[in-house]
Structures are given as C-alpha cells and as structure tokens.
Length: 310
Image (cartoon, rainbow, N blue to C red; front, top):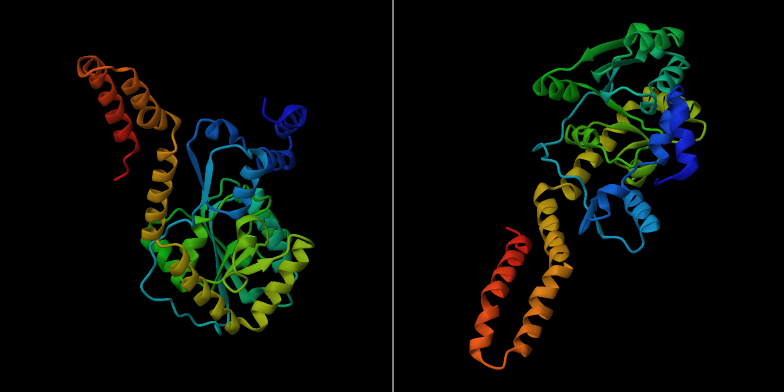
C-alpha cells in the first residue's frame, strides 16, 4: 500500500535473495503507519529528518536529538605500538555489517598477522564466517566470543585498539554501539553514509562506500603503519560524546519538544480558546452558564492533564 509495485516486487524477490532483502529494508522503512497520527517525531540523524521532511512536508513536527549516553569519567589510554592490534566487532552479524569485505581487505595486507579480531554478539552464521575468513587467509587471527556480560565486554573494549562499525546499506539508524566505543575512547571504522557520514571527520575513521574493499585496505594499511596517530581519533570521539550526547541535554530538549507539540493540539486549542468563549457568549445570565460550567471544566482539566509534562 505504501510503496506500490516496486515495493511488492522487492518483497517477493527478498524471499529468496539476501541482496533484495537488504535493498528492501533500506529503501522501504515502513515508518508511515507509525507517524500518521503522531503529534511529533523524534529522530537521531539529519538524514532521517530529511527523509521525513521530503515524504511528509505537511506531517507532524520533527526534532533531531542526539542519542543519550552516560559517559565514562576519563578517556581510556592504550598502547598503540603493540605488535598485534586488537579489533572488536559487536552486535548482530548481517550482510550490511560488511564483515566479508573487511576480511577481504584484511587478507590483502602484507602482514595481516598485525591485526586480531574478536566478534561479540549474535552470529548464527558462524560456519559461513569461518569459511570467508579461511578464504581470505585471516581465520587464525579471528575469535568468536558470543554474548558476554557487560563488565566483560567493557573490559574488552578498554583493552582493544580499534572497533569495527561498518554499515551498508544503512537502515537510517544511529548507533548505540558507536556511543559505547566512544565512551571507551576507541577509534572506530565506519562507512561514510547516513548518520555515520554526518559525524565529524576527526571522531571516527570513515571508509568510502565507493571501492569499499580498496578503501578498507588502505585504511588498515595506514593503521598498521602508523597506529599511534589514531589515539587522537579515540580521544576526539570521547570528547564528542561528552559534548553532544548528554542524557540531561536529551531529556531537557525532549520535554521542551513534548510541551511544544501538546500545546499545539487541536483539541486543546478548541477547548481552551474556542469552546469556552463560544459557550460564554451564549449565556445571558449566571444560571445558564452554570449548566455548561461542569462539562467545560472537566474537558479543560482532561486536556490540561494530557498536555502537562513533568
């Protein structure tokens, strides 16, 4: 209903094609049913805000807020001159996380043994990932860690040198994982698209979507050759998290936005401004006004309760 024959064709193809599945998820986000009755919409990226403005120019009010995250008190210091650099990957493993492309670029390095990768999270396709790693000659430096307790994960992030957070196609998401990496002052490889492309260049290590494998290989080679200079990227990310992703700032802006949206409600305006005045103008004396006072006061109290934000 929302995307017509193109959407239907992609949906049918996606049943048997991972390529079309990723395409369908990226191109047809299906957010219209969720916002058609909304007073306001909160998004976390400029790209998501632009999509809404383009598709629904007369739609609900939209605000962009940076995801909130409680930051560590001090940036983690790490030894970037270690003989082997530890990378980490966290989250759900899907084709859009670009592990196959990373393995290929990694295997093309003159000394791939300079890098080690730990994979945390959900990876139901372990055997497929192992075959890919063997194909590109990097399997001996790859560890599958699965799900671990938060404390163990935080320790691994503090001990790692780099994080891997590639995304293509982007689903319009902002990344809570990236906030976690920044909290550990961890330099992170990201794809230069969507929310990731909007980030300041000094806070992440951006990889071009064009010629992706070659771009990854060049970035990895530079990391291996000059790892020390990437410490500044981790610190810049930690500082950006502190300045832009404060939970207090998020809550304050969200409350202000909620008040703005609810005060503009048509029902509130009708009761507060139009209905009361209309009833009052109809009343020639106090005895008639008393007939309307109780239902009007009840209606106003109801809307006051719904529009009051604590």
